[in-house]
Image (cartoon, rainbow, N blue to C red):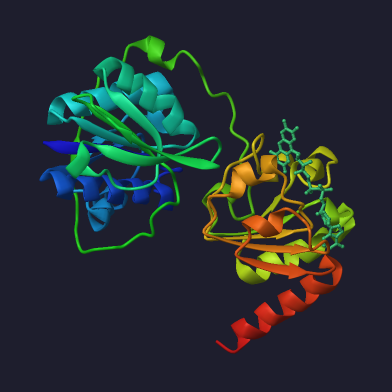
Length: 324
Ligand SMILES: Cc1cc2nc3c(=O)[nH]c(=O)nc-3n(C[C@H](O)[C@H](O)[C@H](O)COP(=O)(O)OP(=O)(O)OC[C@H]3O[C@@H](n4cnc5c(N)ncnc54)[C@H](O)[C@@H]3O)c2cc1C
């Protein structure tokens, strides 16, 4: 049997978070004595799929249908179900991202499967099938046991570092007959944010709040981000005031991110903001108020005026890079 993992791509390029899902599925397969089979949809080159072997997939089932280049959740679910049937699988892995949240429940309901959304660790098989997941916007954890025969796990992106191994997956075509109704929501246009590091996938994020005083000071944030190779983000009032575009707003009502490093500058640390960033591996807070709540969630804190600290910090990073 095989653990099935849904692997999405962006115009033929598989992103880090999807490689992480493959590695996770392969890790579980190793524990259960199974193999890992990736399901890849739409137009993509063979080499990109074969490379999934470097993250533990033995096989790729490729549903080569250009209609799947855009997300059609019912069609994606249909393709996954076809793969599950072909492999006789009892475990399906997706990401707990926007697309995963649209597809995984559709698959689970068809298979009477228990679902865990937001898995943070490998399942503990010695005590059933127990998985730790994040709850209440990342403010708490729950250990849940999936007791159904067929199981669906939605992995929280950016939870595990990637470890490449030698390997090449075998790519097979999977023919799926789609009813026309699974494509009845058409994507008319996609406007991508270009020329920046995508926030959702960024390992490093520099973020500014109302303490930055106005959009005219954002050059300080951008300079540091550029020097670090980081994406930029902001608090909600900053986006509401149109200092920054809304796609940069993180928190309960914005994006949820889990970078390796989150630098919060002039952000108070309200719970609604923390809800979107408290999965970050390391948090650095720069704030001129030593009582700012964000310091309680920080690994490192700098008390001081951002307008003074940012130029010095950017210069220090630049110097560090020059002497590397
Ligand atoms: C239902 C709901 C949903 C919400 N969702 C979100 C969300 O998704 N994301 C979000 O961010 N917020 C959200 N909010 C708003 C949230 O409650 C806070 O109001 C908001 O996060 C505060 O933004 P801020 O920290 O940038 O601004 P402020 O609270 O004004 O904090 C500014 C900080 O900058 C510091 N500062 C000032 N000057 C300087 C300086 N020169 N140098 C260094 N530091 C300085 C201050 O000490 C202060 O801590 C939501 C609120 C509600 C009610």
